[in-house]
Amino acid sequence: MLFRRSTRLPQNQTILLAGASAGMARQLALLLAQRPNRFILFARRQHELQELADQLRAQQCEVLTVCGDACREEDTNNAVSLAMAQFGRIDLALLNVGAGPEQRMAETSVADIRQCMELNYLSLANFLPPLITAMCSQQADKRGLRGTIAHTNSLAGFIGLPMQGPYSAAKAAARLLMDSCRVELEPEGLKFISLYPGFVQTARVNQYDMPAPFAISESKGAERMLQGLLSGRDDYLFPGPLSWLIRLARVLPKCVSKRLLRRVL
Image (cartoon, rainbow, N blue to C red; front, side):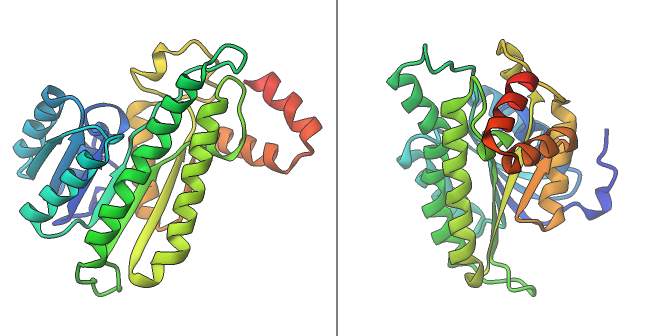
């Protein structure tokens, strides 16, 4: 289904999508390809990347695929370098790398916690320095904007959720890092957008055996991500029911919020 506000879609933009081989980032790429744009697709799975690239090229978009691991600094540096070499600039980078499997603290290991932190925090940290350097070197547009860096965080990054302690901690760290970038670098013409989805029915999430209240479909999640990118907001939370529950839990006394979260999640 075409995005209902397709007339507002970006066009003639150079867009880097990390984690593009599956999930919401893949769906978002297809939405953005409704207009002529240039794409840098980054993920670990070359076959899936190539399939998506073929679909985007069929929509008359230019595509560069870069196979790599966001947890490896050399791979993220390489992706940004190749993008700049081919296209000369990056207007928008969406960093959509992460996973939130069930992790009960009485059963998880230090290695599991470290892996979760690397996937959900280090993947962001590895991309930020090369992207910031590249975008700061670009000419600003009429609005004074040099480039936009968007990150797919999670509503779990606002509060410690049961069965997702390491994931919540990693996403909270990512939230604060993006906040700091926003304060430091917006005067330099860089925009930072944090997207905070709740439960989305991706293939990976459907494998987890834990509650997923107010879950939305993958395609709906991609549409909401696009709305967030177009909204101009620093933080974009969705879907509504779960985001309001998280907001409520943050302001309630902890003795109350603990009971609320145990009951709902």
